[in-house]
Image (cartoon, rainbow, N blue to C red; front, side, top):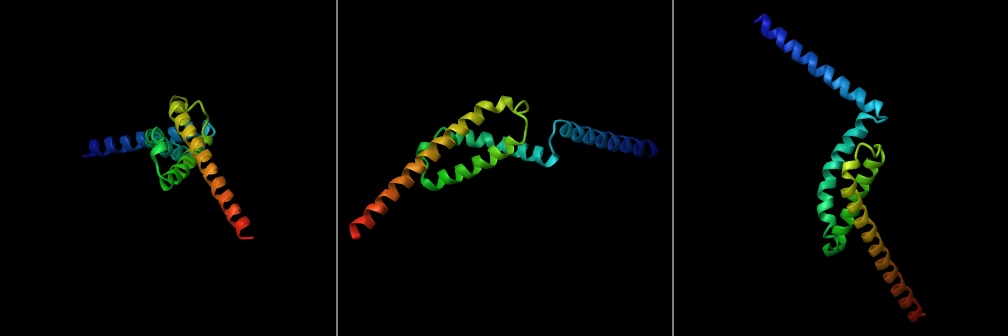
Length: 126
């Protein structure tokens, strides 16, 4: 029984030491644990958005807005982390960024068209 308790105690001690070591490594990289955890979650979301980014032209307006908001969350999380940590995800990041830019431009063009129509309508009624 004492041997079993000793083994459990040692395992808990080793796990605690590994957690402390991981936190120290994160801090030495210049990050907070919260920022690193946000990056991990954003990295998982990046995979999903990368797949969606390939077919953004087929999205309706509401889906595009959701995509833009999710992409902005990912960009914020990735901005807090040094690029050397996520360099293997650069292609996915670039794909999402390109789709983000294209959707933003499409939204601006649509807004400009609707603003021009509104101005024409108000000019006609005057």
